[in-house]
Amino acid sequence: MLLHWSKKGVYCPEGDFYIDPKHPVQRALITHSHSDHVVKGCKVYVTAEENYYLLRLRLNKQARIETLKYGESRKINGIKVTFFPSGHILGASQILLEHHGQRWLITGDFKRHLDPTTPPFQVIHAEVLIMETTFGHPIYRWHSPEVIAKQIMQWWHDCQKQNRPAVLIGYSMGKLQRIQKMITPIGPILVHPIVAKVNASYKKTGVSLPLSFTFLHFNKIQEKLLNQSLVLLPTGVKMRIPSHASVAMASGWFQTTQGRSRIPLHQYFVLSDHADYYQLVQTIKDVAPEKVFLYHGMVNTFASFLKEHHAILAQPFELSSIIL
Ligand SMILES: [Zn+2]
Image (cartoon, rainbow, N blue to C red; front, side, top):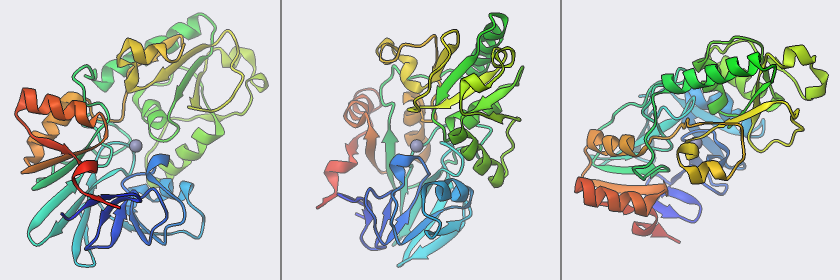
């Protein structure tokens, strides 16, 4: 086994490095900069060049970050390491490890739909595939991003007609930048400072976004202007939203009534930066591995659907290779 599951995260003993570790380690390979994939305090971080500014947002100024271009290989203690685009958010990578003629591919978080803020998922062949399975149930089937973009535009348009601010909540890193790029502005775009910071990192990386204005309090904005605006707020932020606003959120979990019932909103958009069930299955077929391991999300559910409907055997990565 080239990669193992350990308490600190996915570990490569021969290369002596971790992938997205949960605790500080000597050398961390980072697939992308969502907060659950980055821990402070590692000695060295290795990541894709496009992830540099986003990773910098999560770390101390002194943190040592080494970057690789997509497709560029580097040997780490004899293991050949290459990052390839995973299409999840800007700078997100799958990581390919090569050793003694064997290729191990770990997907990190990924999606197959096109996203104008990041290069598309690249199909890489490997003998061993370790794949995330956030949405590993057939109920999760995404509409094309164009359909969702139209829904968002229609909602914003309706809000303007009713003189209501269109308040859209989503992940501040990735989701909200993707939405800004998917739509054609029909009024001002107002963004919370957290979103503005991430926007700035996207721009520094070379991804252009529509013009937006940073704000902190709703009562500081002229009402006439606010009622024509699309307001982008990060998930989890505590803010008093005007009572006449229409509040929406974008997430893959809204595919089910159960998912929607958890959060009362005026509008739900089913938009995810993860692969849906069908894209997960297609990815296994495309990578054509001899062995499949699953991690993150609906591991057991997906494994049983794979076996029953596609005659593909897959194991939970966590159970097959644990190091304590
Ligand atoms: Zn992620």
